[in-house]
Image (cartoon, rainbow, N blue to C red):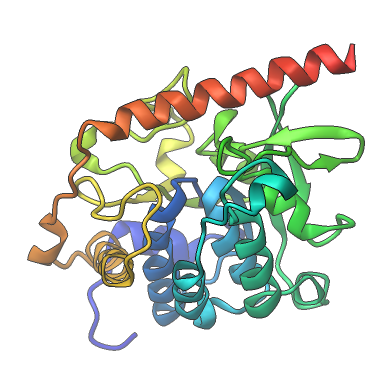
Length: 302
């Protein structure tokens, strides 16, 4: 775009023969990715494929289906719907309605038919096979039920109580095996990869999985990877429902993209979110529940 500064990072993305986009998980904090995707389109950066896990899969689906312009409506509609229903205890053994909320917003703002359309870009969804916790990838354009695949990559008890069955296997949250699947993008023929992840720079290196919570991208990948993330902990909570906070996080995504790719400086990106005492405890609790579900699945299968 005329009059804009360029950076080595932007030059790398624009010069790539096949650019990959990796969207990590982070629950409601993944709304940060909306601002990044908006800015990429405005800058004329066009990834050729997307690899997404966990909360990032909903943005990845919009990217593949060319509905990024509807993502703000998607997230606002999702946040406005009631997510608790005591009656759901009888239907799904949980008071949470996240599966139904995702079903409604996905069908309205993305839709399986768009993902199967000839113009849809490759969308690889990472899931964790519960019986051995290995990462597996499916192309959302070709699976029988794309929504079930996206839900599988988000499976975290108690928010979801039934792990989806895909091709005879039970799968769970894709971030459990690999929350930064940039290697998969390179394996698909990409020569440069843009990673958008939620852990702030002041919090340490990006989170990859429970065994590698402070991941350092090794050479030779490091030279071909651009990472966009917040400077500090994002203001959005793990399960954030307040639209003003979600909107603030989208704006942070836009501004951080401008900082990383255009070399600009924006004081707004110095915003600090409050982790509080419940953040780390909630993370450990959810991980324990997923691992327990995997052990139960393995026992049943054997």
